[in-house]
Image 1 (spheres, rainbow, N blue to C red):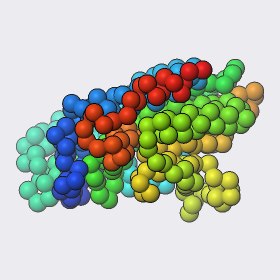
Image 2: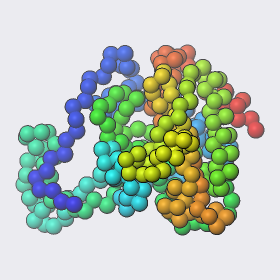
Image 3: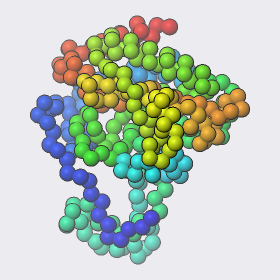
Length: 308
């Protein structure tokens, strides 16, 4: 891929709504910086969700922020979600090109973006979903038993608009992923849902479980979409009737086939329980207010629920 004198810009962002102003939130138009009580709440929520992985004997892995474009291409991600991609771009390293960029204005005077010269081939993308790394990591593996992995990732998705803690270009995602036979994965997801339902009740939140479109299939391109509508594979946790703060996902053997991961000699099935961390922070604020003194005892409730 190449570009000559190309400027990269982002859409105009709405101002932070007044009811979302918080002393520990710094809103940058498309990304949030957390400190103090909000950062503590973010970490506490993540620790509880990571414990869900511990109950499944999940190996915790910290993956890099970049994922190879070749892997997303195997998922047909670029044709399905070109509007969401955040590409890791670099200048072509030829002396002529680098000197031309250095002599240039740096920032475009017309649109405020970076005034780029010729780009090197784009080989990596900023991670759009935490679980993708798990399947890349296990590509070609023959699993001797049900396998679980948990990871937290900074994820990146372009949107038409952004809102603090609700819709951000970069956000934190905790996932617990299971791979095995269809029955093993379905049982894993059922255990996960039961535990999350008990957490939601103990924390005083009101969440609706709503069947949703599987993000791994595009209705216009993939015949599996019809089967998905008849047998939903994604269930979202909806807060306040509008905000998906997490999801339970049954991928069937899609990733097993794509990345040659097998279990008992057949393509492995997979599923994940996913949590959008900033959105869970928002849910706690909406229900229990901004004063940390009014927030639920997250860890105590989890300890009681997870006593297994």
